[in-house]
Length: 456
Image (cartoon, rainbow, N blue to C red):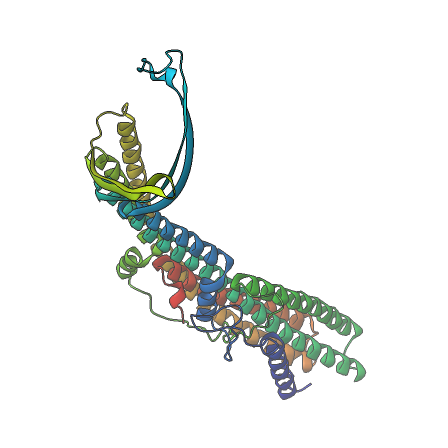
């Protein structure tokens, strides 16, 4: 087999495997506002996968429902400051034993007489309104801060879902690249077997070379089968992370080699500043601390007097034809005096919780800075590993070409070619792994600064 024929077969195999790995899956999702029923025309990029998972994954939806519960609790807390209006209708009958009065009444048996029955009909409306309650006002503020914290937590969960989907996307790309590499190995092994058979037929080769080439081809075919299985499993994991049905068809817009590969590193201090400002888990911690302080303030405010007004109006009588309009109204001042130190105990508990949340918040901010530094280290190391893997692949390809030329010329057997092809197999795998590690490091840095859903 000539060099040109080998290159032609290699190119054909690479195109075929790309068609199997990529074109066999139809488009599923793009843009930020996607759901299970939305299928857009263009293929799915890495950033699209992150945004889709953040929008519709099960964990993200669950977190948003929890945030909705916190928002509903704000309405519940506000009810203490809003009017309370009710109405009722009552028909009432009663009999009275006069002996239960505790004193004798003129004209009545001292041993007791039965009076009644007395029947009344009472129909009225009631209104009560808090005029001033500083504790209730602080409880509303605390509930609002808690709701904001819940929304920030939901954003953080969405970011985590985006990370999971991004890594699943990269695993699918890695599986595609490994499958393409094994297809290229298969082409090379097949060409070596062809050369060995041609030389044996021409009487210038030996059967050992043919057997050795057949064994190499069988090994590569086994690896190809395993790579194909890994590709299919990675697609299932990707669909699961995106919250899509497992029978959905997804077209990946990118390959590992086409994703961004930058030679410049982000500024460490700028990245840390961005993380401290942008990360939703840090915003949630800030709001939880504020809510805890407001809760403590609300408990303290319970020591203050509260002012409320009430009133009712309706018809009262013995029957529907004998009823009069009656009403009552009033203004009430409630002054807490002593509750057995229960309030003081609640204040101590609340202050301890404030301190706990503050410690956790400061630790989380330090952790964020460490995660940024670690992600930058991983990114730099992965970028260097890509360059090293590319250089190793270039040299092993050169080694295979030289060994194949010697084998074709009859200068040596195919043992050197087989050894070189095994090294080439490893080099291709290492390059794929290095590219996948670099892109994973990019996702890790985006997670560290809180911008996974902003990936392109």
